[in-house]
Image (cartoon, rainbow, N blue to C red; front, side, top):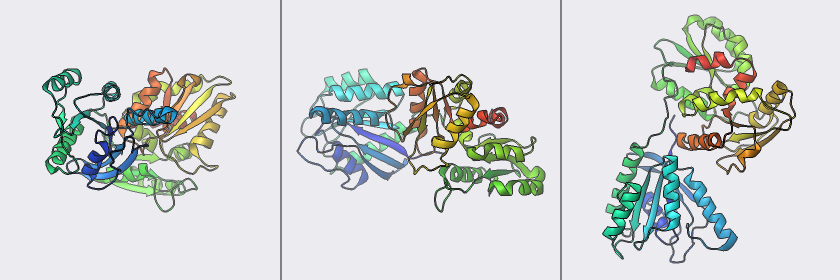
Length: 397
């Protein structure tokens, strides 16, 4: 269930970041100007890179923006973008590797994110051997050299090849969605309720990804709504190898599916697939330790129009309050917005993360866990609160 890779372009003003992104896209995505600070907010562009696939390029504001409070906010946005990328490209020029680029490079090293060093405008001032050695010693990578990236095809090809190699060597734990769960001749039944929370005219992404993963693995995917499940299972008999349900109807589906048929949820499959499974398992029992006045941080990695059936804002908080019997407060952070002061919270609950990359989700969860805050995801929390956690967990172990 691999998402498109996110590549961030970082560096001081006027080192050629926008030229680089225009070269890679083959379009005038970013404004190129002699005036420092032309890029004021991150600019995103989805492209297809040869040998890499679909990527999202982020052109960030200059790391040396000195425009007062607004400039500091722009720099903060650029640094925040560094926590969202699968690959960083640090652009510098004039034989000077500035403090801002070094800060980003060290952050990426800490996060385990691969990055490239690109010395731009080498036709104006070639990279000195002393700086090359210094950067190689400090970051264990050889700087690339480029001239006018927008005009030089060989520069673009060399950079694309370096991107491909860096991403191929990146260590991101992401397992196939149905690893160990597909069996020839067995059906996987996907329970997909169509209600006011379902997107108009289509399925949600985890459901689409599940269908594709089953087909890729040679399995048989059967998709139905909860109302059809009992009759279908009575007909299918022993041909069903696994039932996967949307978390919001977990309890209802569990009451229908015989104990002999394994049961889990899309959200729990995502937890195992995207690499934070063990962290979530360690955090789930925090639901039993909540006290009056505790705050819970809800992390939803996409943005959508919320209504009275919203799982993260309405249904899950109601389940937690009923389970704990406590007076609790809930805060919602959507997308990849800053998390704020994590010391205020007793628990964090992350959505499945289908709209972000595995690395983005892992970095998010790791940030929360390293702050000493228990974290679990929607599906695990709902199964725990409805008394079917062990049953839903079992197929994934």
